[in-house]
Structures are given as C-alpha cells and as structure tokens.
Amino acid sequence: LHLPVPPQPAALEARVRAGATSIIDMSMAGFSVLGLAAQGVILALFWNAEFDTTSFDMTDKSSVYNYYVGVALMMFVGFGYLMTFLKAYGLGAVGFTFFITCLGVQWAIV
Image (cartoon, rainbow, N blue to C red; front, side, top):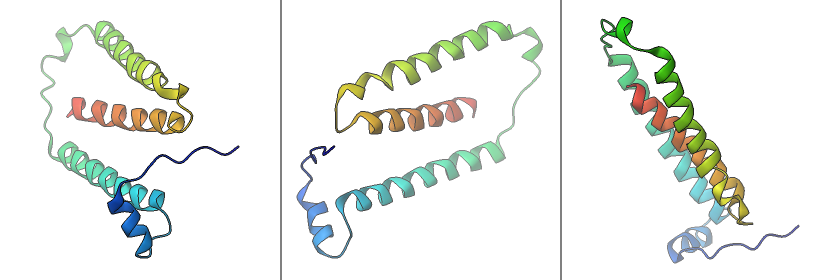
C-alpha cells in the first residue's frame, strides 16, 4: 500500500537536504519538543495549584461526570474520527485529537 506524500514547504525540504533524514523526522522532532514543553508547563501548574475543596459537598457529582462524558465523547469520537476518511491524514487526525483533548482536560483541571 503506497500512500501519496503531501507537498512539503520549501523550508523543510532545505533542512532535509542539509542532513536530516526526512521531512517527517524533522516535523515529529518539533512536535515532540512542543508536546514535552506543554506537559512540563501543566505539570508545574499542577505542582503549584491549590484547590478550594470547601464547596465540593454541594456539587452534584453525577451531573459533572455526565458533562465530562458528553464533551469527551464529542472530542474523541466526533472530532477524532471525523477526518479518518482522508487517506494520508486519518491516523494523524485521531492521534492529534486525542493529544489535544488530553491537554484540554489537564488544563481544565488546573
């Protein structure tokens, strides 16, 4: 199975000619650094966060859980599998949607 390679910007092609193994390696390295930096920032915020738990007794926990499940299903199933019909970007769309949704959940907790 041979999938067509999408056109790449000229800047990335120049990096490949300069010694990188492929355009995909260069873009994945940048994404990895960005993902690790985002996780580091959220971890630092978790470490320094102080949560006010005095009003937790008055909260209806089942409705909060139902809201979370509804939004999570919309994000994971709705947006994640919306772009799977594209041959070249199907798995990338699912993976990036899962990653962005997990970052969003972590940010909402902070």
